[in-house]
Length: 354
Image (cartoon, rainbow, N blue to C red):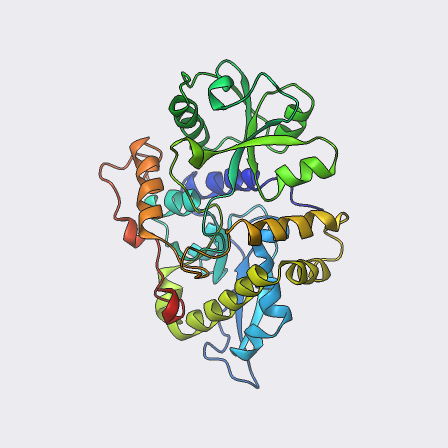
């Protein structure tokens, strides 16, 4: 099954993390009892939880496993498939060593007191865009969305995000909205809604392949701060207890994403081969991986892979805080702006990436 929506993943993960106390979860993927050091003869198992069904967000992990980068680091990779429990929850409970998240997801979880921290940015810039049908001549820019209907996913950041973009373009930021989750795309295609939030490197490409093309507006073209729409997270507890193993894991992960940046077609082939029943239309995978590489998503301006930026964390983090979207463990809005430097770390990346 193809991934239906990273935006739905945003919603399900946010709800699972921010609804209150962390759920008790089973120990699938736990590294308790495993050899933390790992040797050539007895590799250490490291687990990572997916945030959705396999897609090009995760290509670097599958590349690193297939090409032996993890093996060279003395690591045996365990991939925990997406399920109803949020990756942030699995990581905070120690059930997964690492997990895939996104910037708002990390902010929601950490503000609520959970042990989650961003350690690697597969995408160096955000992939979210506003999507509308390509034949909508009446929607030429975000200001034209005033009075229209938004099909969304129920996360708290969606509406203030869209209002900010529309107002920056000269509109009022007033529109109707319905929560439809994965049905949002069909609603836009079928004319029952006017716009939604899409992923430029997936849904926008997919819409063309299925004969229902969308046009899109980049949020950052309209004054909105960029964000990490794809992050790998861990917990401070795990990083402290397994610092060397974490560094080896992220070194191999970085190699995997660097390979994907430089060899997108080969990397896409590896992702497809690792998940043969997931991609009935492999053209989408090839196009998506090519778009990530050509669009400068996988490397920053310095050519680095995986690095997180203080400016990006503070600008988007300030948006979340300024709109009252961050709450503590009791559900109360944070009274003081967080220290964003505690929400992420580059300390476990190879030296040239810090």
